[in-house]
Amino acid sequence: MNLVVDLSGRHYPGNQKNVVPPPAARPHITVRGLNKSFGGVPVYSDFNLDFPKGRVTCVFGPNGCGKSTLINMIAGLIPYDDGDILFDGKTLKQTTIGYVFQNYREALFPWMRAIDNIKYPLELMGMSKADCNARVEELIASFDVKFDLQRYPYEFSGGQQQLISIMRALAPHPEVLFLDEPFSALDYEMTLFIREKLQEIFQATGTTMIVVSHDLEEAVYLADHILLLTKRPTRVADNVYFDAPRPRDLSTLSSDAFVQTKARCLEIFQTEVRK
Ligand SMILES: Nc1ncnc2c1ncn2[C@@H]1O[C@H](COP(=O)(O)OP(=O)(O)OP(=O)(O)O)[C@@H](O)[C@H]1O
Ligand SMILES: [Mg+2]
Image (cartoon, rainbow, N blue to C red; front, side):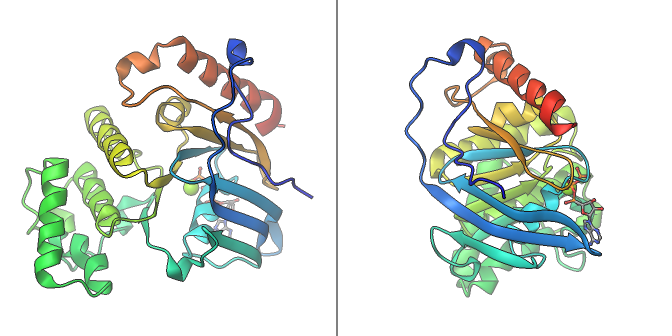
């Protein structure tokens, strides 16, 4: 049986071992006794985990280990066989979430203009037209969007489509934002821009964020916690805490704490994840 893993920061890189641990964040999402199989082959077996509230957790693990499956089950996109998932003790139905898909090309409704894609979750919530428009204007200003949102998704580049997906996910002020490899389609400049925006939004709102990433540098840069998953059958290899001050910038990448945290994650990856 897996132990419940408290993501409040059990691990510190190298010479930080003696620092006082940060105040434990309250769990926001609790996963208990989760079971999920595909075609009789288990991906998750009696899996337990807490995601802390108001923190950025980056989920890192090898291809096919079940990262997307995990966040898809938590976000209610696919069913699980058994177990309980609660948000602050509430069910998913009682919680507002946002989700940015790994495959951005299938994420937007192709028959809707970009602006209507962004408004869609707001309309579902029954928000008035005036309030929908005001929220979209706010997002346009916040992301400094220069392109015409009256156009359809196929008329945008991959990066622009992903930006629209992120705006749609943020529109309803989600309590939890899931991002499944959000930068995989973006060029470096766009990646930096969206990273900074996500960081700004996180600092302004304290939204709990769960980010799947296969890029360790990116995971550490964004994270308060890096959750390392093993190959299937999937378990938590470890979790690593990174408390560099925000806003983080390019100088963070060369700081000792960053380099040590990344090295610690790599060590866990070599010894645990690839076993
Ligand atoms: N609908 C499905 N039917 C059968 N098997 C599936 C299905 N979805 C996922 N799987 C299997 O479950 C495992 C986990 O898949 P998942 O997509 O969650 O991995 P991942 O960690 O997100 O991988 P990647 O890094 O490639 O995105 C894989 O072995 C995959 O083949
Ligand atoms: Mg995936």
